[in-house]
Length: 329
Image 1 (tube, rainbow, N blue to C red):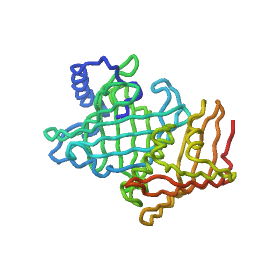
Image 2: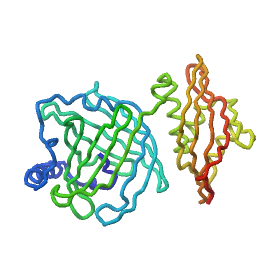
Image 3: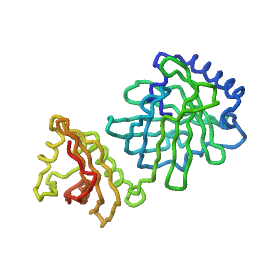
Image 4: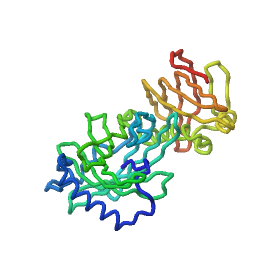
């Protein structure tokens, strides 16, 4: 699923992919510690196995910087995952957008169910690859999903295992690992945890979508989207009591050398009164300006209003919360 680790070159043909999957079957049956039965179809209808994941999730993830090199350096990211049904519910589309100190990651995965084989294929792509990776194929057994592929990583082919493990109604764990010995041993290189986003359950769908669009545009420094999500008479009251209009607020995002690193809301508060809503909480904010990193903890309150059928932010207030992890430089 997470083939953004540059697992497969774009030139790898479909025939080679099928041959690789055939080899995977041989490997997993002859290995002394073969992958479990999730690679073998059973009689159970698994077409609804991903229904539990439909919705929006807060994602925390880390990936091993240099797999299969002995490295123990992990890169960490934080962002949002959205899973929605497509093709009448016979498939689903995953969109992940995350950022961290090492940069930004945007990827998508199309999950397709084969009713004859009773298995799912996870088809991943990211914005830098330009093509779909070799699919990982498998199924859920007793609530645990395991998916396998045989792919090229740098100068060798590796066995890839991707595991999806629900941990209650509000948490899902994901793990990717490589094996160079046919599944006898594994090196984990991707760990992610999704927690249920409270916005989807606390707010109407249209407002929740607007809130997510605002947060995503903030992370991307997407001025054009932000401009459409705030009112013309928008006012921002900063923690030092200074005021900003819509124009000056958007100009901040246009500053050369400026980039948001993380924008995470904790202890969220949601209230709605007809056409007016409050979305607030504790904001963990990190950004870079002219090569200098900054981090702040703020109490934030966004007042949303409906204008011509669309939700927009009319007023924002920031109050600084002293925190030991605040840094500049």
